Length: 108
Image (cartoon, rainbow, N blue to C red; front, top):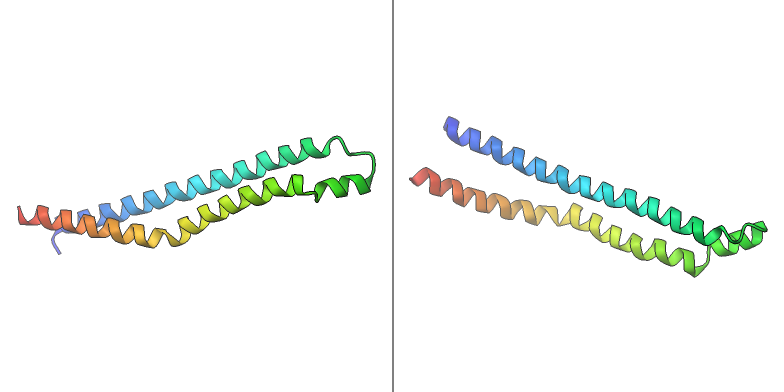
């Protein structure tokens, strides 16, 4: 393997790693926003029912509160699954296209 090919392979690995880190960062930001926003929404919905423990508990586990956490949680789960399992296909396709490009450049 020539030094140019080693450099190109090293650059390809760096680009792949950087893309992976960016996608992980997006997921963690999504997770943080999910936790913060849903906690605030839940707090507002529960703030009117602080009279007794029973009313607080009933409202905490009501469909009104749980539906927000559940629906957005499912979206977050899909985001996680696409990040974890969808990544293999994407990486293989990038590698295939990069190899084609590298072989074109080496022929010239």
